Length: 179
Image 1 (cartoon, one colour):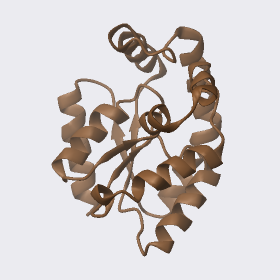
Image 2 (cartoon, rainbow, N blue to C red; image 1 turned 180 degrees about the vertical axis):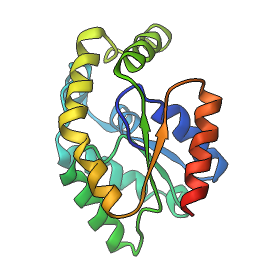
Image 3 (spheres, rainbow, N blue to C red; image 1 turned 90 degrees about the horizontal axis):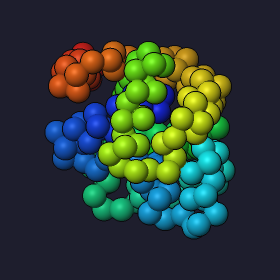
Image 4 (cartoon, rainbow, N blue to C red; image 1 turned 90 degrees about the vertical axis):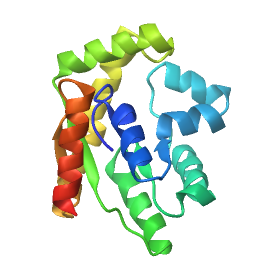
């Protein structure tokens, strides 16, 4: 799952993972569970975590038994270098990505969703300054992945605006159309 912060990757990723009986692996959750206080402080400030740290935690999670039959990644890879590392990791295992879902939504919708989430979840990395920084970082670091995955034939674009149920239907249709 890829898309800007607040695009619904977590919500939709959990539903896809549940429907396919595979784990939903969020880079943020992996970091919050396995990283030290310095990394958590970086996250709260909206800073990027170095590739070695996040990749090591994601590889460890992908090596767990419940991910043997598949997985839904959420928020990783975030840039071309991480995508190359993921490709190499999967190739060593004789695997490849089946699909990459790109959830797209207008920036104003994303801001509103993340501010609402901040009120509900009280996440320290969901404040107006950090949200704007995360969206800017996404645009410069993550958007180049769109061309990469489109070129590989695995990209599935999904309109991420609107009701979560409607988005889930569009997402299921995009995945079914690509299989």
